Amino acid sequence: MSRDKASRRNGSPFGFTFIAPLVLGSVLNPINSTMLATALVPIAESLGSDIAATGWLIAALYLTTAVAQPTLGRMVDLLGARRVFLASLGLVAAAGLCGQFASTLAGLVAVRILLGVGTSGAYPAAMRILRERGEATGSKPPRFVFGVMTLSAFSTTAVGPVIGGLLVSAFGWQSIFTINVPLALIAALSILIWTPHDRAPAHTFARLMKDIDLSGIALFAAFLLSLMAFLMNLKNGPLWLALAGSVVFGAALVWHSLRRPQPFLDVRMLARNWPLTMTYLRAAAISIIVFSVYYGFAQWLQSAVGYSSAGAGLVTLPMSVVAAAASLTGARTKGLRGPFLVSVGAALAGNLGLLFVDGASPLWMIVTAITLFGVTLGTFSIATQAAVYIQAPAEEIGTAAGLQRTAQYIGAIAAASLLASIYGERASDHGLHSLAAVAGALSAILFIVTLFDRTLARVVSPAAAEGDAPAPLIKETTMPLTKLDDTSALVVIDLQKGIVGLPCAHPADEIVGRAAKLAGAFRARGLPVVLVNVAGRAPGRTEMQFNFTPPADWTELVPELDRQPSDYTVTKQQIGAFYGTALEQILRRHGVTQVVLAGVATSSGVEATARNAYDHG
Image 1: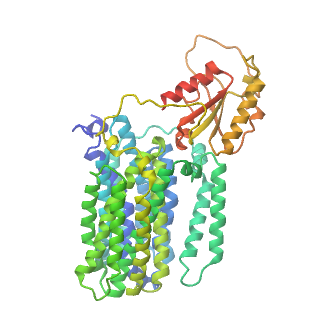
Image 2 (image 1 turned 90 degrees about the vertical axis):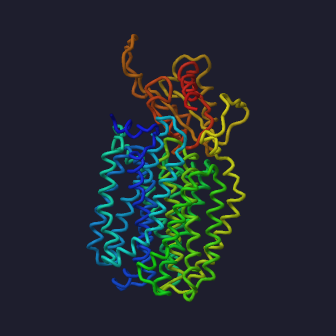
Image 3 (image 1 turned 120 degrees about the vertical axis):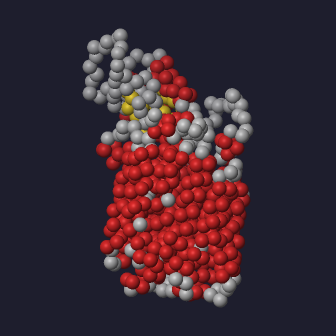
C-alpha cells in the first residue's frame, strides 16, 4: 500500500500521518518566535546589552522570514514542497548547533537569521501539499486541517514563553537555540516516512534563478532593513538617512516589480486581487498589535514586576489554553468577517485591560488582561489561512502563503521597533501603558475597517466552499463584447514574421495594426499583455511529414507589436497556447477572469487557444 493510500485508509484524504509532518514543521517558526520572549532579559544581562539592543534578535528573525518565506514559497511551487521542506529543516538544525556556541549579540543575530531562513520553508510547503491533496481528491477546503495547524502553531506560540522560561532556568539561554536540533530531526524523519514524494522538477536551475528574482529580493530586504533602522532609533534620535534609504529602496522595488514579468513582490497582482491584499494588510496590522504586547508584556513582568524567566512564562500559560480553544472554535466557523471581528475585538479589550495594570496589581488582573490575546491568536490565524486559501490562485498557493507570513513578519518588525522606541533601556509601568495605548488605538481602527470591509463580501462563501449550500449545475453569465472585466488580459497569437507573411483571408497589415493598437490600450490600463509565438510542432507520431526549413527570423514577433518589458512572451510547440507553456500560470497569477485573443490564424491557433481557455475556466 502506498503512503498516499495509507493516509486515506480511514476514508479521509487528510489523515493523521498526512497532517502530522506538516504540523511538526510548521510549529518551528512560531515557537522560535516566542521562546525568545522570556530569554531577552537574561541574554541582555549575559552579553552586557540593553533591552533596546536585544530588539535586533526579534527583528532579525522576522526580517529574514519576511524575505525568505515568499522566496521559499516560490521554490515550493517550482521544485516541490517535500524537497524544500527537508532542506529547510537542515538549516534549522544547523542554526540550533550554532546558537549553542554564539557568545556575542552579533553572533546571535546571525544565528537568528539562519533560523529565519530555515523555518520559512515549512508553512508554504504545507499549504502547497494541502492544496495538491485537496485537488487530487476533489476535497473541499480543509478547514479542520487549518484548525489543527493553527491550534498547533498558536499553542506553541502561546506556550513558547513557558517553554523558553523553563529551558533558560534549567539549562541557560543557549538552550532555546539547541532545542531546534532534535525538533528539526523529528520533523524531517516524519516527512521522510509519511509525506508523498514530489514530482520531478519541471524547471532547470537557470529558470529557477530567473523566477526567484534576486534583484527584487535584495531591494525588498534593503527597504525593510533601512526602515527598521530608522524606527528602532527613534528614541535616540531619528536616522533620517535610513528613512531616505527606505524611500529610495521602496520606490526602486515598485519600479522593478512593474517592469519584471514575475517579480518577487507582484505589485500588479496585489493591485488587482484587492481581497487578498486586504488580507495581507490586516495580517500585518494584527501582528503589530499582538507581538508588541507579547514581547513587551514578558519584558515588563521580568524588569518591572520582578518575575523570573520561568515565572513570566507561566503567567502566559492561560493564554495558551484560550488560544487552543479559540483555534478549535475557529475551525468550525463558516465566515471570515465574524472571526476577524472577534479576534480584533479581543485585542482591543486586552489592551484596555493593560491600561489598568501596574506592578502592584493582583495576579488575577494581570493574567486576565493578557489572556484575552489568546482569543486573538487562535481566531485570527485560521480566518486568515482560509482567506488566503480561497483568494489565491491555485498554482500560486505556496507563494501566496509565503506573502501572508511576510505581511505578518513585517508587522512583527514594526512591533520590535515600537518596543525599542517606547521601552528604551528598561520596561516600566509607564512604558507598558504607552504600549497598550498605541496598540489599543490600532485595534480600534482595525475593528472599524474590518466591520465595513467590502472585500470580505467578495470572497467565495465559505459555506458554499464547505459544501453546505448546493450550487447550480450551470450558472448563466453574460460576457458582452463592449465591456471588459477589470481583470482582463490580451493574448496575441502567432503574430510573427513567419506567419503574417503567409496568405491570409484578411490583410495581415490591418490585423497587425489593430492588434498593436489593442496591446497599447491594455498596457495603458496596466492589464497583462501576452505575446505568443510558435517555434515548431508537437513531438510524437504524425502521419504528415513536412519538408520545410524555416528562415532564421521565422519565430520573431513582428516589430509593430512594440514589445514592452512588462509584456509576457510565451513560445508554444502546439496549435493552442496553453499546453506545455506557462500561459495558465501567468493568467492565474494576475487573477485574470477574461481573455481577449488576437491573431491571424483564427480557425487554428486562436480557436485552439480559446477552447483551451474555456477548459481552464
